[in-house]
Amino acid sequence: MNIYKDLNKKELEMRNNRKGFTLIELIIVTIILGILAAVAVPRYIGTVNKSGAAAEDAVLSALLANAEAYAMETFMDTGRKSYPSNPFSGASVDGYTTGATSVTSSGDWAYTGPIGTDDISAGLILHKRNDNSVWSWSYTNADQVGGGQADDRGAFGSRNITAVSLEGGD
Image (cartoon, rainbow, N blue to C red; front, side, top):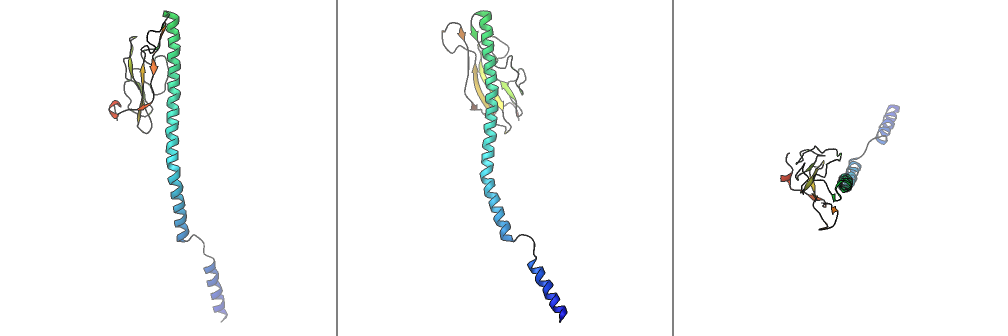
């Protein structure tokens, strides 16, 4: 009889000594993780888009500062301020290749207007983001004031999403 008592003790210890999670606990944890992912992923994507826009704004600010420096330089030489025909002239921008008129891979920058002339030009500044969307800004070096003395500066336009046909690749 002593053997049966020991056997029952061991059986009770084994039953009370279970380790692991029940199926319902695993299902509840999976549901909680799904809810967290449903909230976190859109916020992450929004943050990535905002950071891309902030990086583009930094490049455009540098291009504007470069155009203003060019305008001051031409003012000193000719007595009239004017923007360069290519907004990338004299600027160092990662992803821009001199003479590029289309964007083919993420991070590329391009200008679609006439390049290498001092004539009045208008075109689009293009940038391809990592999500393969192409964004554009209008640019012109034409006088925006109209008849103002010694001020023939151009203008940078606002951000727009560009049709895929302007992409020139991919």
